[in-house]
Length: 296
Image (cartoon, rainbow, N blue to C red; front, side, top):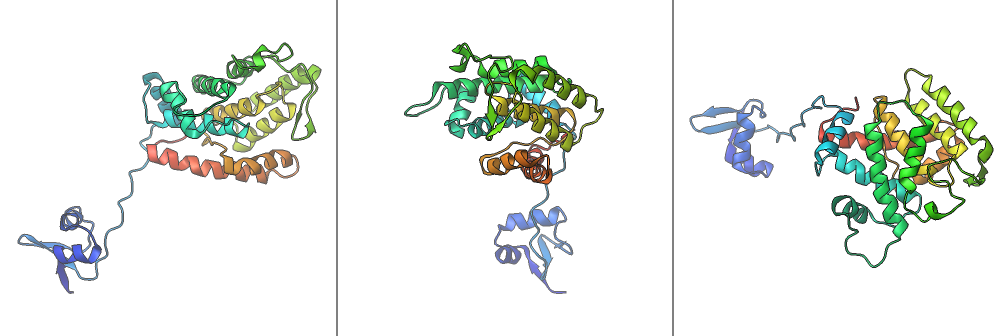
């Protein structure tokens, strides 16, 4: 077998000689050996690939979210979830704030340099951060009407809607509404429909992704609140994934059309919404891998 020196290998691989010596010291170059002070490397040896990151640390996502929330730790998974979930969920509903403006509100309580912003967008963004704290704190609890109404109250508090007499902040709708051009549950039947939905959902001892998605679909079809149903529904989605050890996900703008189509077709074709959410899950898996976390 023919051998080359570390210096020659460095030139061949396009790295520093020091890097080559480190590869050899860490036994990442099969067949390499030290002759005196010079590393001898097989001529046909290939440059070692990037060393894989170590696997998950064993820490689960919910525990870390709670730890980082309590510590006010910047730059961690809690920080990222707050900004990404809030920006994307609000953006789906028409918020004009950018991702950077959302981040500024979370980090500095300002919107940064900007010409003009909609006050309701700012208020609902700040409120959404509080809602995420709520779902982290209550992740282990069963869903209840009281908790869901509280999410809506916190989300819409201080907005223009909250000053309208006909808009019931933190309570079920008083006027009929539509979603996607389809009729929803009439106001007088919402209470009974929500009780039935929660009773049937909570009766399942273990929830799969399909169970969580089915709850989301039925919640959005009821459309219990005058406004804010999509954001409350997606907050519940994230919470229930945390509770049941399911990898959570965030519906981003490029998935919005598929998400809505999946909701529209859920009763006849579950695969469309499921595949959309699995795509979002794959993206969140990369976030978990980066922070070396597990879903449970």
